[in-house]
Length: 120
Image (spheres, rainbow, N blue to C red):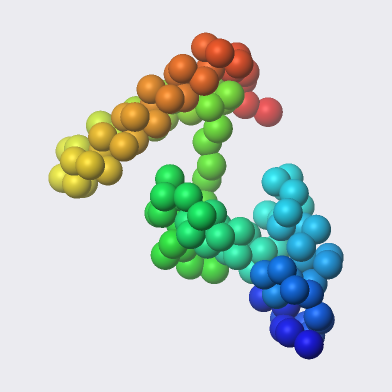
């Protein structure tokens, strides 16, 4: 028996030491997992380990609010560009600012290919 990393109960589950209900929550990218702070933290840390684009989530605190922008959001590329310009003014390392500007370009290209919409 292993302890589930999310709900803290003892279960036997081979993949990632998650119980079935918790695995169901974290394996779908919908809003359900956002309601459980431990699940949110777990998913964010898994993303950070799996993909360098999410490295900023490695040090996420369990109760730290986050806000995610997606390329289909018509405002996203503008907001990220504003962030990058403000970050430069605050002497944020240039590689981080340049990464943000690369994300802006990627968002614009994605939006041209798939379309964008006003946020829900």
